[in-house]
Image 1: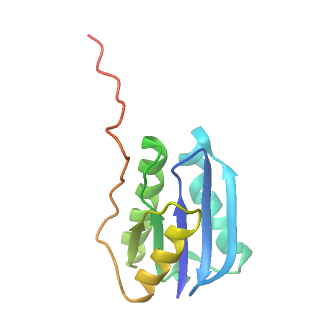
Image 2: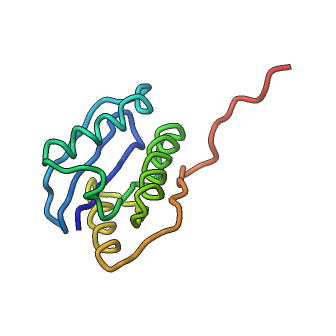
Length: 133
């Protein structure tokens, strides 16, 4: 199964393309404040580098946190929307090691596991500025 992986919890965003547990392509870029502007383009470029399209995807594995409030919100919104629109399974994972979350997610999705919607795990309450009077 062709699976897209998405991690957006830090300024460097990461996406990968896997066939089963075999890594086909992986991209890391400094997204920081341009994540919402770049994530869809980067996914398209990654798929095109392997001569694939969105319709070839069979699942999505997303890193759900802990991490940046805005980064997780944007990345998980994009991943959830793609999974919903393409009607493919999505799983959210956490992990201490760099690719531990990918291994766990690929195992779950390979066994027909799926989450309804991935909800971010921020690790602490978000710091939101109170409204000004």
